[in-house]
Length: 228
Image (cartoon, rainbow, N blue to C red):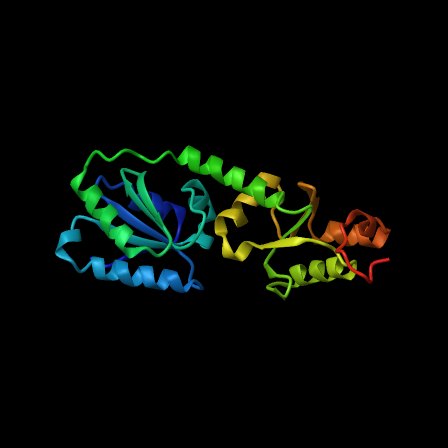
């Protein structure tokens, strides 16, 4: 049986209802490690010992509601499920761990369920830590030396113009942060700029503050011999 490609939340929900062990790979096409995991799953589908396991893959960024609900923080992540409940997981491209966990759950029909609530709680704690990682934090697509969208490029230019001391986080590298932060801060778009743990806003607000003359005085500056 081949690896099933899931593309929607409904397809995912229907697939994992099975009382048999289901293995779902949350992947991203740009991540090389994910290609390796997909190859491993393809090989597993050909082996007699895994004939009672259903394998699938789903693009994490295309179904953020599923990723967030399942506590998927990085790609690749592989979830093991029974009757729509998560029984185990493997974060990262770790074929030996995946093999061991699948064999364990095939032999143990009464495996305890993971506490997804704790996973969600840990995401919220992680977001708080990221936001407070520096007095000025920018969540953007790409990084300051290589912005991956025009809005991110513009806000980086504004911050650099004022010699701002800030750290950034590339939300394209972590779908869980990307989707979780939208809900956490109730702000649906990127980039997002935070000062002292509080959301300042997106590009439009930062541009308005720059035009009104408010922005420069609010931003922390890098220590420099040129700073006057």
